[in-house]
Length: 493
Image 1 (cartoon, helix red, strand yellow):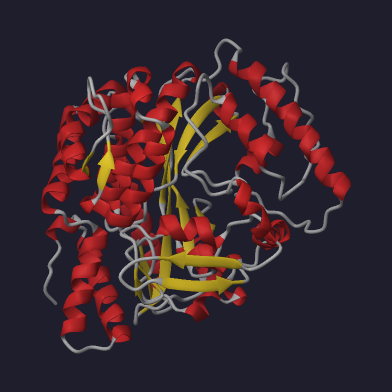
Image 2: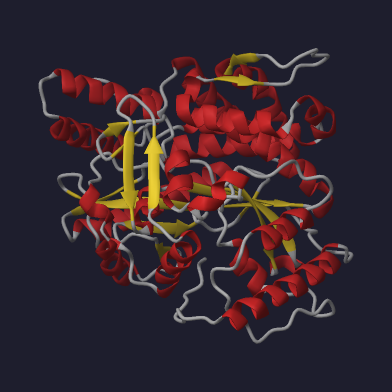
């Protein structure tokens, strides 16, 4: 999806040719994965951070084109809406102190973009959903004027044939209809990339799936939307509903959504996930390259397959890369942006460490953890955060039982440490981020809970709802500037 797309009109023959090319890519990918040397080399981590551009009153300001020209840095990129930016972090080796390195780069990137924004009396905010966002911010004029976004909107609308409908429950339930994809742009996230050896991919991916609900509860930072108090991590519900391309009359037979937790555990290899995406989802961008997939051209680039994979949005996604002699990555897409670099890196260390720490147990765990249980955990964690009760497998269990998600997280912290140790992360780094995670769990103070508590305070001071959301957001921005983790943020004005 990072590719710019200028062509917007396609014929049926274009879609047919593109689909044929996708199956050629799959055959080539199968051969590549089985080629000696594929996926070898050190394990690396990467990330993409999305943020908001706001004015001094904490309201979204659509000037990403201006800032990108002034920044003149290829690591900064457009996002769907004109008041968002994306920063692509440099890949780092997993051994040593990777989370410190990524945290420092995030701090530098936010400072650099904030300096550019200040010249326009604006600021940069890392937050899952901007609390001051208004319906007017979701007007089509606020979509970034880039070909791929126009084609995305056109393609999803063609598939659905009607408006997108959003219905999210919570303290202030929200129902709305949107004719545009700009609603999806309300979501900003920290997306992680973990390079995985091919022979360990299935177990690693399944472990990431089972760990993600825990990480969602721990990292929740999106408790409101358009003046409504909703889920602790409202992004999860909003993303799925705001670009649901399924035709309304076809939902009854469970047509698969392009935003999904998944369709089942991976049985053998990463190839299954690529095959599944090609078989289940019609193309949106049927753009053929001049390169025909060839197994003897190692490693192949497979641009059509990568383009198509980028038009589905599972919360954990398989990624093929031609760099480093060809490799596979797991893209972990569920974590929100913010509150601070320390918080985001604690979330990343927890999710990646737990994924690695649980990986070699998957064959024993999965029989007592049907996929639908893990999916249930995912949405429950997004809705209730650290107050969730989830299903978690126990040794010698005779039936599944619900238990507090905080108990599960605390019990699994040794597995997080073990997984980070497997990656070669140094002991000081492991201790630091384990402490940050443990402090947040024991205090219960996530970014989402902090926002809700401060909002409650301002509402009780007889401020209007609009004034309360603005005051809370300004307070959030001031605390974020301190760089302190959210557990150390003040709960007084």
